[in-house]
Image 1 (tube, rainbow, N blue to C red):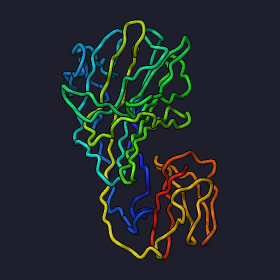
Image 2: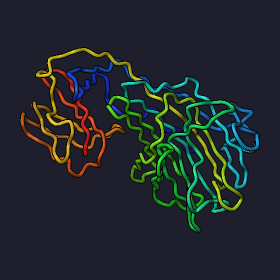
Image 3: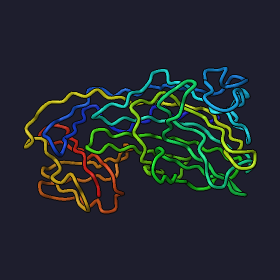
Image 4: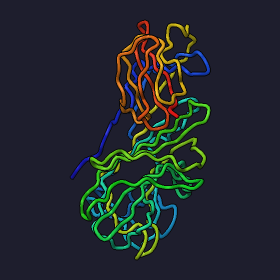
Length: 325
């Protein structure tokens, strides 16, 4: 049985500085803490709502564990949630990250929608009332296999991002990361989904309000016996949250400025000599280069979004946030 994906680090932030485009501040991260807030291997037998979960909708006691996996059954209607051991506040002025991982398997097309529906997600509340849902894991089926997708939140004209079809009976090891960037003028929330070795999926189509707290992970049975979330097994469910402690101080911008243009179209222009990395919001290094003052690095092929550019300037590790248009 494959075990949980743990302790995924999104940034090397031991001495991390962020220089905002609209003000001359250096932000050093004194500490980064990843906390495991849920870990359920479903090694017990019986109803999940008798083993640390709470029913917030539908018929209580329908989602069961057989001692190895949790089982969703086509046509059932229970929705349940498990409270985090520590509620996770989404802080103003910071980047907040929550991750959940699990092993998903679907044996057949029985009861599985062909249009798509969601069955696993995060919520801002816990207990008997859970309504606000984020980082939703979707599923849809065909005659030959199932496809998983991701949606950041509700609101607007939403469209989940789907991966590649997986043959029925084949396990899918998934890792979902929900990133909220409250450090920019217009905050963003993005959900990503890694499925086995498929390409990383990213979604930000939902325009609903960004949560101020994340408090639980939820499982949902939806639809009918012929078209819904079908019969799914879930194993090794782990949820982690990442928090940072920040200290802010004024500095001489001439000593710490690394990037000239924080709004980027095709090239990043540099104000200092450095070995630099361009890091996306999932902590992945997407460019590396050795640059000189007044030189540039082509980033025309990068997708639109927020990135961090890091380097060492005058003995200080500096990071500047850029927005790729």
